[in-house]
Length: 494
Image (cartoon, rainbow, N blue to C red):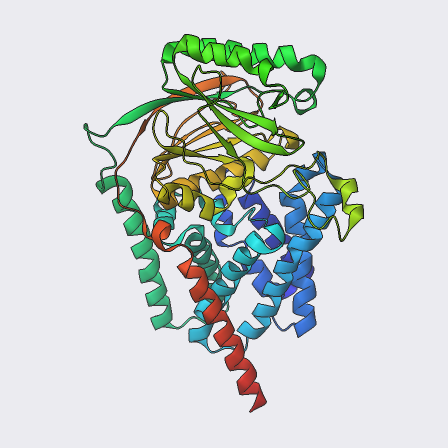
């Protein structure tokens, strides 16, 4: 029956299954078999045919997964799809080598290559760590607990490994011993997750805590920098703050760039927010854009009823073609696809100290695990993500973004609070459990206005293995992948 299915149909099926894993339909289970049709399609293909078919699969996958970027930049979307699909093409070449490897090498080779390519995509050319295979499992809590040791990369490895096992079973090429060892690994990972979730207490009655409120303003993107909408935006947030005042939170968190003025050149316009913080005797974390001598920063201000912010954090990792133009001196035409003006990157990681130590990840900074690791290692007791996904309208983008925040909480075993302009806003515990989300009466999470409060416990656990040692798994994956390829090349010379 499989012989009757054309490679084109298999390629399309693989791309669709993988893309649905990152949709808003909670279909992460499809990722466990999403690569299998691609493997079947690449059988008996030549070196360059393997590249072309896999690259085409990548084109379909990325088109279906990041379609929402068209609301920001069409040309940027096309360039990103064409670029990201290259990693699928390289994976196709890896499958070409895989078919010629001995079985022991096969079992680890493709998962290692897949994870290595995800890592490369996450950091090359400023990095695009979106839709990592592991992210598709953010709701599968028993499996993602290994992220405290391996980061999200371990989950990506496991999912790609299972895809390979399914393929080998279909082709009746899986030996009993190899299958038994693989089953034992999967049982161990799942059992560890169950143990952590059910038998390892997270907090006790003596664990200190702070009460945090996140607010979701639901300001349409077309109004955010409209001069005539400034009073509307201010009233919107004032209403939310007064509505949640009864919660008596220690910290109230605003979304990214929530204030419609520039801190620095329009500081006096922030006076109503300072006054409100003083009146409520609480602390605000406010997202804004700073204009400091014609240098613009995406910033977070910590306000506690004083004339100046207690502390300020400037975003460290900027969005290419969203906040700045990479390589614009070399390729001036790229300025035509940037949606907003140039933003400068901050230089210092900041751990806020009031009401307790915590750190902020602005926008897609939560996609880069080394930032969270650095903040937690520097003393942050919990993490905050403030973002604005209103750019992308209705669709899968907010859910795909939220998945990254879940992994940052698990990797570092800390709570994470999230305030997004149009959603998803809420709280995640150190095990990756979603404790509470901002929702409306219809149970909607995005493009609604509201707030949510939650006690955040200041868990005193030793640093996780991943926080301490970082991307050790990546090093092993690269070393193993190159060793298999070199072995193949040397064997063919002989």
